[in-house]
Image (cartoon, rainbow, N blue to C red; front, side):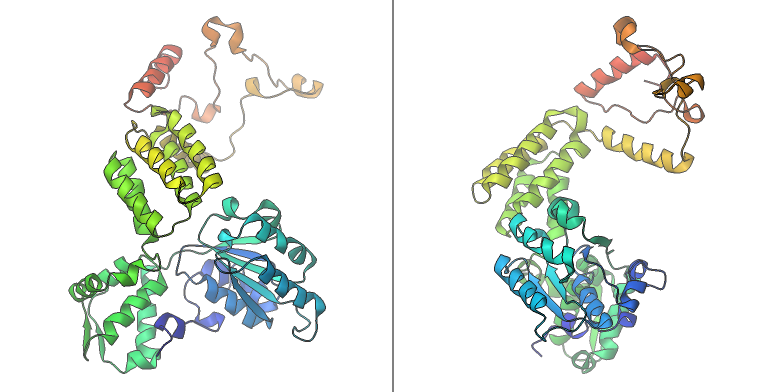
Length: 424
């Protein structure tokens, strides 16, 4: 039994594939393409353990195409070109359908490695399926991204994960040898974090290390996990838990905890750009205008560590993390855009007030575009008390300055300009 449970249970047919019904269900974006075999080059984006590799295998099987897989961690330009050359020669190794080239962790491919795929994808020598846990907008070069469809895979639901456990108990011959009684599942689900592979790894450990009958309870799960913590650390499966702790420590203004979690990521071999990108997001989401320099520092950090890499970039990251952790905090900008987007979804496409519409043609001017527009610089303090929101939502307050020195100054500025219009 060298093959892990997750591998033994990997579905071979689309009908056996749990979850992702928004993609492969009868009305899913990929369903018809899989059934007809008209597969475009695509990127599968989602967290670990949601079935990206499995889906790629099923697509190849259902469409009757040769399937080649490369890992971005261990493959280079030469490996990519070898597969492409074999496809171009069409020397009997491939059928009339072009092969599928699956690249796991494609976000780890360098620009030159991704460039080597462009010609083959464009000419149709291979159909590329890339899998990534990172936003492809950041990690996949634009030329390659424009030639691929991007599909987002969602984490497994609680119901999906429980169904997966029951499938293991019913179908796997090694698990069936034991009498497994699934009394409680909360601890299993919590520890898996929506990662099906992690769930099955834990489940297999519990079942194979206990005498029959195996009664799965929350207490038993937590006790076993504590004794086998290496299972969850050695392959970086705590990735998202540690990132969460890292972000929350900075948000909570604790530089000691923040640097500790930074060290955990560094020692675990985390991608330096991944860490720096999270700091960029946090600088705006959690600090914002309480200290606008935070965004500048985070952006400079991203540029610097991308150029330098490990191990020296750890010092730059540490400096940035400590600066962000000890900075005043505000999520006012984050809340403002959330509320604005919610309002747009609720109210739809409201018309732009005529006074602030552009009027590049005579007809538009005759229709009143730009009439009564008050040019701010023609007024005292470069301010005119005009209306800029659609009539239906005028006087709506979306931005509420935070309780910190800089944003309090903004509040005073807005109060003087707008009097009591927005409640400042």
